[in-house]
Image (tube, rainbow, N blue to C red):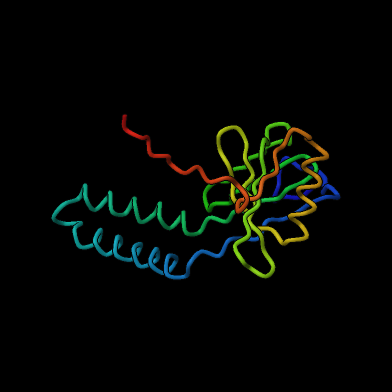
Length: 167
């Protein structure tokens, strides 16, 4: 059994793992700097204002957990599976093909990766896949649920606001 995806007792043949989106490095570095500042502020204000110190420690803890969270997303023959692994808890989200209503491809001019916006209900998840995996995912999606709309982000019609003529 794959421990990373608890709802999946076997590894399906068609499995496409999303590539982790590498955020900007300054965001991660800035996050750790913020954690250090919150901890220092909590230590300095411990004697003068205890409630503020506790709140500062709480935010430092929550922000640390956020920075350490790992997210794995996989598109399988069952649907979209996302597994969030935090230090104190885990969360498993599963969206079967019947719930997915649209896939929008967005080419961000990267040589290897393409971004897929997988829509379900009124929400969406934006994930990066290799170009070959993205084509296979779209083919699998059409096979599993023919009602899924596959759109191209660049080809989508832009709705321009029309000025009304005054009479």
